[in-house]
Image 1 (cartoon, one colour):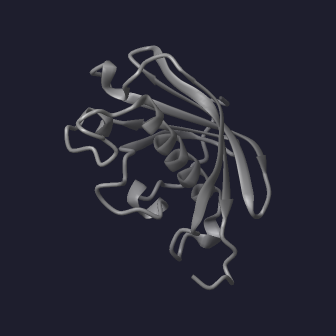
Image 2 (spheres, one colour; image 1 turned 135 degrees about the horizontal axis):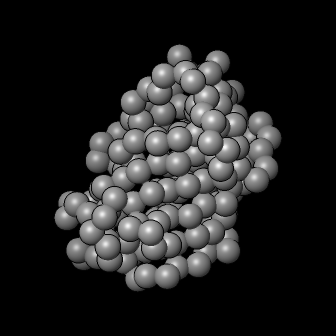
Image 3 (cartoon, rainbow, N blue to C red; image 1 turned 180 degrees about the vertical axis):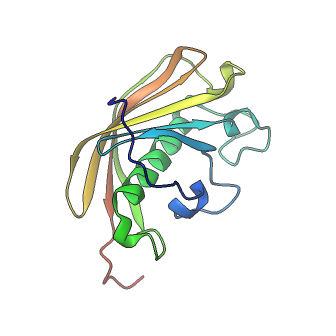
Length: 154
């Protein structure tokens, strides 16, 4: 990742995402530029994490962490949209997933989420991502997100 970051002050994470608590999983953006974003999270360690199923937080719940990093990145790149609500979208494809653990909270350390934009147009984005904690890779893969056009009726 390029060590430079864009200098605009960052809004709160919750303002960048189309979610509200408790689904805002990211704590902070630690670095970003036009192609990449790095975020940090501790919510994978919380027993009341909304993605837990029967008390277990599958490593594949990490896809949502990566998707939130992508959404935050898209919002940061779109300053004209900053005054309104985040655009609605959905995760269309999760591919090339490679997990090295079974559960996200296998290490009791902050999780680092890195997403790198591979392709982007007005309606979709493709990112490669990695989730790490304590220097260990937890999950890697690629995500394609599709945004809903602004003139659609929901």
